[in-house]
Length: 315
Length: 315
Image (cartoon, rainbow over all chains, first blue to last red; front, side):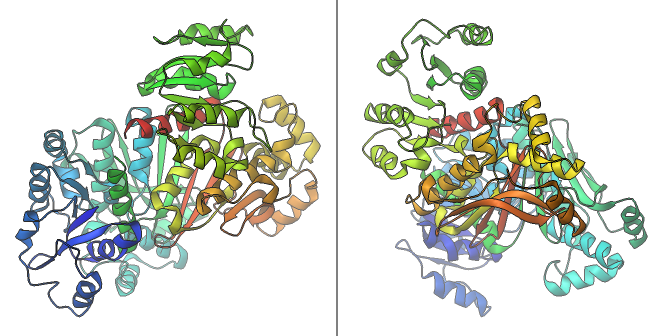
């Protein structure tokens, strides 16, 4: 498949880097101001070099990406809330041209799910978005394979930054501010970590899961969300004395979405450590399926994108 | 899709029972001596009632199943080793008639993998076999989505009977014979539990995984296999003093297959409890993915069969 990649951050670059391994070709790579476009396949290594040197990825206009021949638009621009723009319009343009879309951008899937599915219904192209939930963990394809109707709930830890912070607070008896600074030094937390620590990032993912279970009906504003910024070190010590720890746990059911800190058994499946994520899928016929792995990262998320591309290629 | 189901044990019956929920129709259900065949769809409830009353499933000849119009042959007859017959011939007949095949029977996939793929290559039909490894856990589809080339190893616990026995031995300080009897009473172990406790069942599953990773090259005789029958209760006590326990662990790489009892950290991911199974998929780009769930059972395995049918229907 020929991939047109919008977004040249960690995910977009990793998709470009790994596409060849998965048997696909990159015909465009665009960041917010520039693009490199070549219908015969771009020089991926050259483009990645330029980005590493903080130079523009190319000399083309990102808007021109939509005019070339491609099979799959990979939407890996930063997640935006509310109207989910410009990501939503990118999805719209690709579907109106009967192209496939693979999203790593959570915005359109969390905030405008029904509109996205309506555009897909009128298009020859299909939309997939495994990369929006759980990075390398095949969360959505597992729900899809079980069939959403057979899934009663999905629960888990889907934000690695918050999980890392809580793991370190418990392990070292340190307070939140201290561990957040450590996480930022390590690149595990962003300079502006708000969406990770206030639960928004996790909530977007559980909203997406709720939309998949119920075929729409949810947006971020419908989620009940509490973050980890107010957890004192003493709370973790107290939990440990009872054989428990604290994790930022989310849950999606047909009734809604909740994200917040919860006490969990310290050796139980939900007490994943570091930046690892886990989801537990509760099913009618097959009990509880657990899937854990690396929830974030350029290459990790890129494998989810390319796995979606492969599924589209199979049809 | 119209399903022709060979095998009326737990798995075959559960597939028949759940097919409707997944949008598919059952046109034949056969055990070793009888069949019920109806091109317009069999009366599933009637057939299941007869099996529950230990009556023949129908009055038709199982051989006539191959003469009707069906889309997918579900091969759920008992796993046999060596020549994997009669299962292999069933697969062969379906593929020669350009029909799809979904296997729950491990024999053809473990023992005659390259021949099976060769028949598939000459057929309009495709072969899938999620149900042969890990019951409800989407083990093979996760490896498939990652792409086998990106997987370096698969490790885990894939036999629930052996795992249950070891869990109970550790929990209660009881010896093997005692817990085996308990497992048989509960229906967790068969009257003849040999293949579960001597590691053969787990080895077949890891041989299948090795065949998927290397596109063939392995059969049961290539696996290094040791079971749990000789583990004394004292070994588990000793392990516990060191924060460990014992599990029957298997591993498949491109080099080969090994199954045997191993010491594992008692709170680690491999120390699944009871009849639960877990696989750890080691990948090049996405770290380690873990998937755990119910590894066996009629409905659980049926969900894997029907998930394969859905994937075939998608094409």
